[in-house]
Length: 66
Image (cartoon, rainbow, N blue to C red; front, side):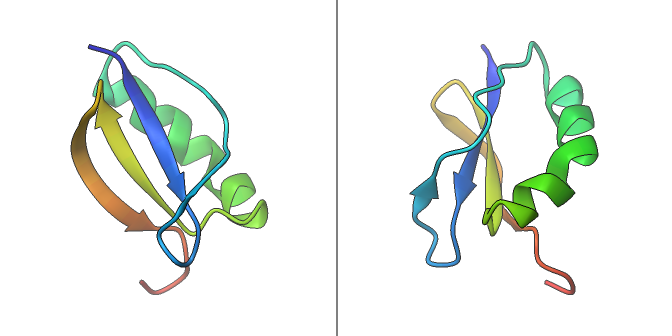
């Protein structure tokens, strides 16, 4: 399957974000570790990692201390 991120606002509603697709979970997580500050600055409050349509984990907050 293909891994991708779902982006959420503070109310846990989906918001637009980069439409990146990754071959494996490690690649998706590596990309995310580089861009999460920009996502937070753009209004993304949390993310969910997806494998196809299945949730791998999340929501994971991008806010400090949560």
